[in-house]
Structure formats: C-alpha cells, structure tokens
Amino acid sequence: MVKICYVSQSFYPYTGGVSDYIIDLGKKLTGEGYEVHEVTLSTPETLRYEVVEGIHTHRFYRRGSPDTISEYGIFKENILKVSHGERVRPDVLSRREKFGYRKYLKMNDEALKEVKQLNDEEHFDIIHVHDFQFLPLGGLLRDEGIDCPLVFTWHIPFLDSLPEEWSDFFVEYMNDYDCCILSTEEYVEAAVKAGLEKEKTVCIMPFIDSARFSQGDGKAFRDRYRLDWAGDQTIAQKPQTRDDAMAWFYYVLYGQRPTETPFLEGPPVLLCVSRMDPRKGQATLIGAMPYVLEEFPYAKAVFIGNGSLTGKIIASKSRGGYVERLKDLVQQRNLSRNVVFTGHVDDETLRNAFSSSLVAVQPSIMEGFGLTVTEAMMFGKPVIGSMVGGIKHQIVDGETGYLFNPGNYKQLADRLLELLRDPQKATAMGRNGRERALKLFDVSRGLKDHLKVYERALR
Image (cartoon, rainbow, N blue to C red; front, top):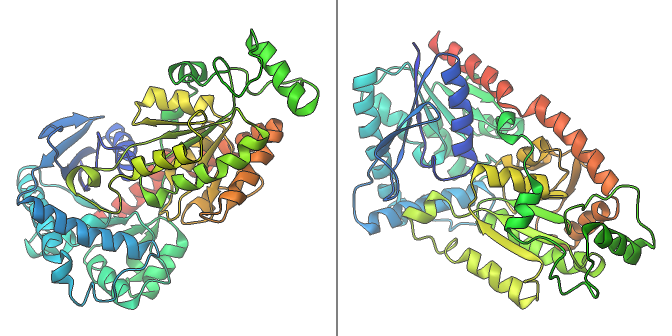
C-alpha cells in the first residue's frame, strides 16, 4: 500500500481552499487504496489525532511564546502580500531576522520533527507539502536524510511581477523538491522564468468534489436567516402570499408578472462565500449594494465565512477586526435590512445557501485560484468575479457569469443588475457554468493529475 503524507498549516475544521483541496483529494486517494496522512497545526479546539474522511490527521503543538507565533505571522504575512502584488518594505528580505524569518524557520522545524517521527513509524512513499507556510520543509527533510519523493504545491499566485529578490527566495526553496505544482500556466511560466527547474513543474488547476455540491434546500436557508418578504419594511403593502408578493414585485418593476418566478421563496439572494479577509474584497459587494437597491430594494447580500486558522494562532493587525469593520460599513450605509453575515456554516447549510441564491459573487482584491467560484458553478449558479488570479480562468465572461475589475463596486453593481433584470439569462449562465465545472474542475480530474505526478515521482 502506498502511503502519502500531506503537510499543511490549515486543515479541518478550519475551512479554506487548501483544507478542502486536501480532503477531497485524500478521500479519492483512500478510495483508490492509498493510505493518506495529514500533518497540521493544532489549536486548543482540535484533537491531537483523529481520522477525518479516512485521512489520518496528526496535529502538532506549536512551541514557544505568543511572541514566537506573532513573529512567524509577520514573515508569513509579508510572503502573502508580496505574492499577491501588494507592496512590502524593500528591506524585509535583506533584514529578514527583524521580520520574523527565524520564527518562520522554527515553525518549519516543528513540522519537521512531527513528520520525521511519523516517517520513522510509517515509512511514507511520498511526502507532499502544501503552500508557502512550510516551503522550507523540503530542504529540512533532505538534510535529515529522508529520501522519499518530495512534492510541493504552491497554492498562492506566483506573479511575473514579483521583485527579483523574492522570486529568488521562493525558487531556492522550491528547487529542493522533486516536483512543484502550481495552479495556472502563467504561474508556472513565471516560476520557471525566475529559475525553478522546468522539469520539476506541473500545472494542476484546483478542484472540488462535485458530490459534495448536490442540490440543497433553499427554502430552509431562507427560513433560517429570515430572507423572506414578511416584515420587510421596504415593501409598502405586505402581500399575503408568496404568489401575491411575486405579482406585486414584478408589477412595480415591469408592469407585469413573467411566466417564470425565479425568486419564488423570497427576495433575490446575492451570495458571497469566502474567508473573512480584506484580500477577499467583501467590502466591494457592500459598496455595490446601494446601486442595486435603487432598482431592487429587496435584494439581500449574504456573506458566509469566518476567519482562517491564521486568525486563531496569530494576532494579525491587517485581518483583526475585519468583520467588525464590514458591519460598521453596513450600518453607515443603512444596509442592515439587506446584508446578512452568517459566519461559518456546516456543509448542509452551505448547500442550502447556494441553492437559495440567484448569483454568487467572488469580489477578491487578490486571489490564488478561488475555489468558491467552482463551488457556485457546481450548483448551476452564475458567478460574478473579479479579474484576478485563478478567477479569470474559471469564469467565461458573458457565458458562465461576468468578470469585473477588482474593487470597482460600480462595475460589480452593473453586472448584478444585468442578472437581476434577466433571471432567465442567470439560469442559462448557471447551466453553462455547471457543465464547465464538471469538465474542468471536478476532483476526478484532479485525482488523475495527481496520480500521474505520484507515479512519475515513485518511478
């Protein structure tokens, strides 16, 4: 039996693209007869060991004072910023010891101890490290004499515009691995141009398990969060039934009721599912809502998501209080009746949320790939997303949804209004999106891609 060890900072129960990626892939590999282990950080809420979806999950305690964790976070946040095209101080690398680099390496050393101990017991056939938090781990493993194939997946952008000192820094570590996976061809080209050995690179676009995204109960979600007509003060005369509401709604807007009623259970839901992080651009959707409400005063923007594991273990000034700032923005713009924050929800509630929506919105300012776009497409929903990272590779503008310039809330509002005015177009775009997602972004394709990498590495 082939044994694979995954290593990542974040994993279940913390949501996010990397966590879902590993779980979906790990379940499929387990079904193919592989034994899958996961090494990840622990928090006070998590167990030291458990089996998650057939994946043997090992969590290691981070050692050191809160200052150690904070300094690790400082360096990690600088990596995130520069990789997403944000400005960082020009001396971060030249004076890296002042910016938490030593603690960044210490966290990698803690991961090394856990992986090495497990490897002594399990004798892994492949060790696959996920994302930049544990980028140095490959070289550390080699220094310890571990000679099984080492695979690395870079889940964030690798931009051609990276400052040279940073691209050199990343590539030096990436070349310690036998294979490096990046999520788009443009990221591969930029990494090779920066010095990553071409024969080591593979492009594997992220994926999800379509089986997790079967149709949900939209009415249950609306009922839970009171996304209905009743009690909405924007309606001058409360209708007695949903059909009455639809007749009134379309009479006001168009002077007639259409043959189909796309908002059968209540006002249209504009759904945004994403980690609560300034880079995800939730403020852009809030900025678009006043323009939307001028024509559709009953529309509801629903935000699903919580913070990442980073928010649990690191006090990050850039992320701290972000949800509170968004809620203040909602209050300032008198949008309280039209904006809902759910926080984290379970899988069933998430399915219900997608089913309740007319359109999904991914307004990221910066993005590696953006798997929530694929999730929405699996539900047959059109997606309006910002033209960054992998989002622009998923959405076919005008066919499966729309693209807009990041941060441009007026442009986003115009795109939303197009679909609100023509729900039949939204339905057709959603149908096109599901076909595209099943073809390109299902885990069955991702499994084949990874098996090719693993088989080549083992040879």
